[in-house]
Each structure stands twice: as structure tokens, then as C-alpha cells.
Image 1: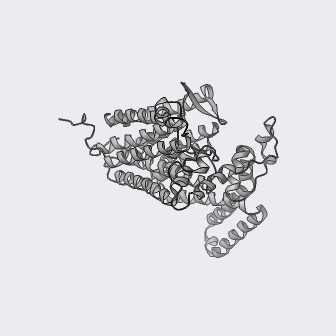
Image 2: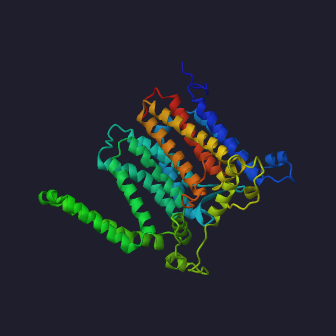
Image 3: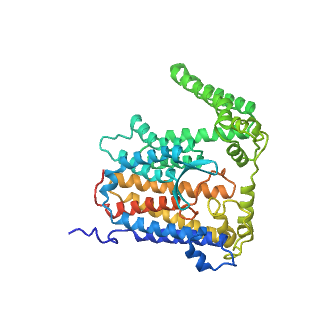
Length: 445
């Protein structure tokens, strides 16, 4: 007789406890920066009008979803993976018609009562399921280019729609699926090429264009000299080296400037330039010129990051204590409850508190990887690595963003930042993983 009706059967309760701890920390962090002494804390918690009371409501709704998922048959996730992915893409397309503009991004669908749904968040779940479904097919040979392109297209499609919605941060999250694909056999050459391109972009921002072009030419000439004997036997090698040189010089001279001046918004280019210690001239940005009433030469500053650094730095080693932060409670840090929620931890509990907090995240990630490696099913393993990759990307980028090591791209801290869509997304991601792990003896396709 099946024990499926027993919700605790086979569930990894370590993950459940880590999830509950992180959600609780998130609510307390929001409470620390939003609560005012002139109002009763119990009444504001239950009133549903403050951000921390809303987050508590979101947590309750997520608990219902989590329970429902744990009672669901694992085979449903494989059966409806492709259908859910198509539904997610349709939801993202619907935002262009029904979407609500929030902070310059038309990626939200209003649900009424002050609540909004962000399809790009939910689509991360559907993409993880669709990718797991595709890679687990018996006929899929991931060593072939065709299979790699199809898997890449599954992640690129929602990323492209996110860019069209002016959600660059969410679009970048979909690149985390490369980690999962690498585990499943994606050639390391692709990751090397991607890393090299990133280095070339950074070098383009930091080094003078003429000096960089000359340096690339000298490197190509040196390689040609070293391989001069092999080049006599293989003309293809010569064409390859010259082609790579031409591509690199063309990228740094034309492609990168075009993207920053024509594709990115002025504030996005400014944030990326500020990360490498440079200033971006908004007069070169075509989008800034087209906006009526906007001065093209106006340069947005790095106020958010500076205030974030001040708040974290003021916490020192031990922190100022619970609800004693002057910077975060004084609302000097913008987006305090969402993108920069990590600053409240840094100021209140200092380096020690941040170290312990990140240690909880590390434990969660390692536990998920352990769960992934014990799966018998390719579907479950791919999905588990997708969850780990998404969480890692969010954590690394958000924390790096708050301390100035990464541009501000609007990525929430998992289970901590305020937001119903974000909390629901990570809840569903994690509890589908727990359901699949509970049925790990099954071979799912």
C-alpha cells in the first residue's frame, strides 16, 4: 500500500527547516527596517498593511502551496513540464498587453488588492522543468550540437522576453542554467568562450580602445609566431586564429559600444561602468536622447551602492544590534526591503552575522547538490541542479551588488527580499525538488 498520503514520507526535513529559517530571517529583516515604535507591532503584523505583515501573508500562502506540492504525484511534473513552459511564455507575452509599469519595467500583471504577479519569476520554475524534461528524454544526446542548441533555446526565450520587459536582472538569471547543462555534459569550451567574452567586455570598459586593439593584435601575432610550423601544414588553423582576432577587435570596437549606447538604458550603462570605476557619458546613449524632457548629459550616480556600503560598513564586526541600525532604519538605503535587504543584516549583526547567514545559504546549496547526486532519474537530477544554480546566482549577484562588486540589476535575495512573486517562486522551486527527492526511487522521464 502506498504511503503517499503521509506528507512526511521521504521528505528531506533538513531542507524544510533551512527554508523556514531563511523565510523567518527575511520577515525579521523587513520588520527591522520598516517597524516604527509609535505603532503596536502585533497590530501591524496582523493588519496586512505593512510590508512585513504582507510578507507574513505571502509566507502563509507559500506554506499552503508547499503542502499541496508535497501531496502531489511526482509524475505530474514530468507530464506537464512542457505545457507549463508554454503557459509561462504566454504569461510573459501577456505582460506586454496587460502589464503594469513598475519602476520602468512592464513585467507585472495586476491581480487586484495591491498584489501583482511577475511571470518572469514563475517562468524560472517552468524553464527548470522543461529543461529537465528535455534532457531526460532517451533520444536526447547532449553531446550533439543540436541538443545543446535546443536546451540553450529553452533558457534564452524567457531571457529575451525579460530583456524586452526591461528586466535585465531576471534575464541574467537564466544564464545560471549553464551550470546545470555543464553538469550534464556541456563542453567546457563553451564556458571558456563565455568567460573570455566577459573578460573582453570588461577590458573594453577599462582599457583605451586603441591600446586594447593593439594588445589583441600583438597577442595574435605572438600566437602566429609560436605556431608558425603548424600553420604551414594547416591553413584552417591560420583562418581560425585570424578569425578570432577579427572577432575580438570587432567586438571591442563596435559591438560593445553599440550595446551600451543603443541597447542598454542610460542608467544601466552607468551602473556597469561604475562597477569598474569608470564614468559613462549619457550623451552617447540613444535611448536617453529619445526620451522627452531627459537631459542626455545627465549622469545617474552610484548613490544606492554608496549608501549600501555605508550601512554594511557601519555594522562592523559584531553589528549594532536588532533594530538599532541608523542607516537602514533611517531609510538612507533605497529599495531597503527588496534588492538591498542584505544591508539590514550587515548593519544589525555585522560581519559575524553575515558570515553565519551566508553559511546557512551555503549549507542549503550543498544539501541540494547532495540531493541532486543521489537521484536515479535524470529528470530529478537536472531539476535539482537547476534549483541550486538559480539560488546560487541570485545569492552571489545580490550580495555582490550590495557591496559594489556587481552592477545594480534588481535581483532579489532568495527567501529574504520582500515580494510575493519571488517568495512563491523559490518556495515552489524548493518543494518540487523535495517531492521529486521523496520519490527518488522512481525513474522519471
